[in-house]
Length: 146
Image 1 (cartoon, rainbow, N blue to C red):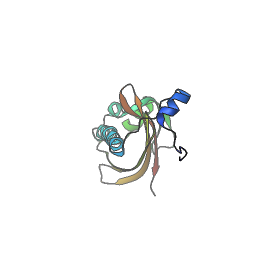
Image 2 (image 1 turned 30 degrees about the vertical axis):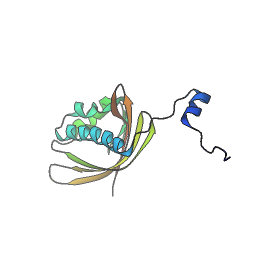
Image 3 (image 1 turned 60 degrees about the vertical axis):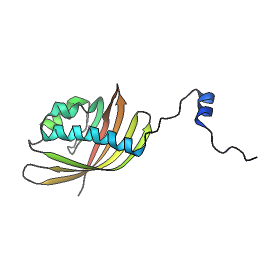
Image 4 (image 1 turned 90 degrees about the vertical axis):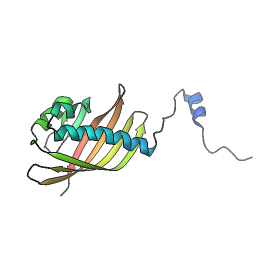
């Protein structure tokens, strides 16, 4: 008889009292990310900083292209209020992983097109958390592409 090589999730739950992570398939992860990022992008396009901030957690860590970071929605509102009207982001999700039942991490290319046509390409790392029935951005870090 072969020894058991894997420990089943029911065994883990019996031994530790912890339930194993509920895995989302890749399609579900992309759907969640796309829904949140579309809302974020549409808020920017319509120059509605409060709407943009509504896609972030109350204590989100936010680092845009400005030299300083902020914590919370007020920092997100302040940052996007300073952006030009007509700014239009387009994004491509390059990588994504589920870290826990309620956490996704993603690596995204974003092109911010300014009203004058100048495009600012950035890499974005975003962590989403499932909070009170909604997926929200809890960590947002941009790196400019040179």
